Amino acid sequence: MITLKEALDISPGEVISLVGGGGKTTLMFALARELAESGLVVTTTTTRIVKPTPEETPLLLVEPDEAKLVRLIQHNATRYRHITVAAEIRDGSKLKGISPKAVVSMASLKEIVYIISEADGSKRRPLKAPNATEPVISPNTSLVIVVLGMDAVDCPLTEEKVFRPEIAAGLLGLSMGATVTAESIARLVTHPAGIAKGSPPHARIIPFLNKVDLDHGLAKGRELARQILALRHPQINKVVLGQVQHAEPVAEVIQEAS
Image (cartoon, rainbow, N blue to C red; front, side, top):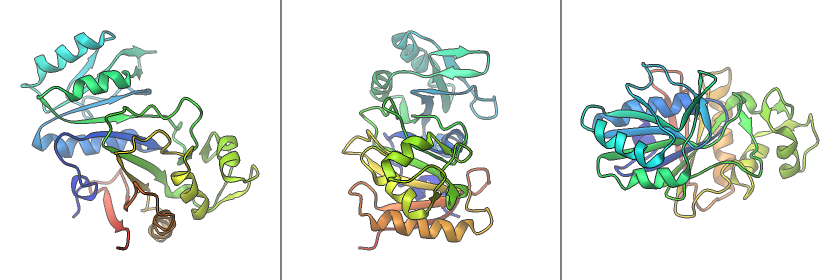
């Protein structure tokens, strides 16, 4: 079994941002469970996420004053291996995230070994294109994970499967309703204004192809990985295939040919 930590080559001190389609929150907490075995993990968002359950995070800290939030983390660092932080709870079920500046401040704490932040939303669609304000990636991010659902491959370019399809259509030169091929998704991943837009130049980018357990999902995932790597994006040298809802979330790792 390949762990998420192994598949994503995660080292202590990493600041990880998740972008892209549905499954980001599930992946964030699955990764946090793994990483908590080797040190304190802080999970958060720079946008909004659903309030986590006690099974997903043992401690939720909500504090709009970011200096106080940092002190709260320090106060609880010896008692917990995983803490989720946010600025506010809205409508009783949504967390409003913290600023990229706060992520930078947290990373300076010696108590924190890993930070994982969900950096955009997708309304559970398997594919998305970002608008002008997304994603919100902290400048100290060392790893950007681009989540893509295999049910997006060969789907029509409509609201049902693609969040902000009109933006995707403009970036890819497609008409609304056109078939979203693996080649189109690969271009959306690597486009300067695409899914990983705003990734720091020093960060590595790893696409995570989710839901390969669907019918023909593994074959589609391998083809999409091949298409992504063929575009030779300088920050992408591997693609992870998996299924975040499973106990063993990693199916395969496909590396760029040397």
